Image (cartoon, rainbow, N blue to C red):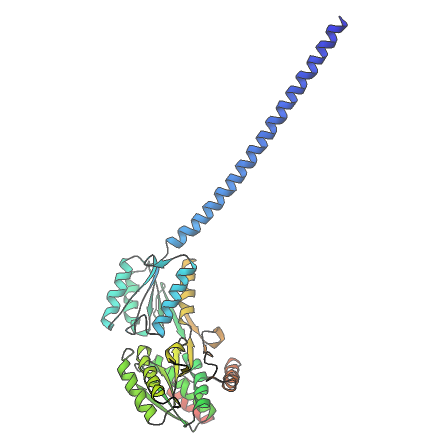
Length: 380
């Protein structure tokens, strides 16, 4: 009898142990399943967020319409296109798949090019240059659901961002450099089409030259075109033959002719003292001839940065529609290239930097009109 009670007790203990073990295993399995579900949930949530970001980029597209200088003008339009390409690369887009441009060979192309890009459902469309202002203003009013941006002009509209630059400031600085580099006491300025915009380049340059030496002569000529390479070359030839040794151009593709003439002269006479000051982007490469370079410096106008910045804002839902962005030295939007270290000496650089600081400190208000320039010259 005692033996039977003992065996019953042993069986009962084994049963209890089995039940407890099974419960523990089930709980561990449940915990494991919960962890897996949590991890899978987090992974799916992260995947969803990544998909949302990819979808946002994939759904966004940007394009630009050039002026007649063309996308490869080595100046203004090219700088804008480089900004769009940089934006595209940063956001995983490619030409024709997220960004593109429309080439304008004549003023009459502006409206058709803008309308074509609108029909292709681009979210943001840039008009590169003040000459596109009228056409862009018209299509912007007709297409309120599309965002537009104009470079170098102001267009009213809640769906238009206007980007301008203080070109006179950067031009003043290269004017200082030209005056310091000139040995003949004569420098030149070649403009594309005369306008309020290009006058800012001219006036700022003349003021910078005068700041160093009011007696230096500045010859100003306009080619009446931003795409007349031959005319740019002819004007430069007359200037250099007349004793001018430094020419600053603000003429788009016309300026390629200025570079061509300087290089022709240098090729014929390696000792010739002829220099070109580029515009908008660093045009050092345009001045290369053999082992020397005729590009003294360039007035940097960061159209590329402005285009890239506005594009990114639009992608992120922060498009500055209806706003005017006026960019200058204080924004690092205009400046001076220092690539040609042999020609753009430390002495020139230090003097230019002194004048730059005076502008930043408000000691110098760079003129932008003939009236302002006259007052400035009287104060010297």
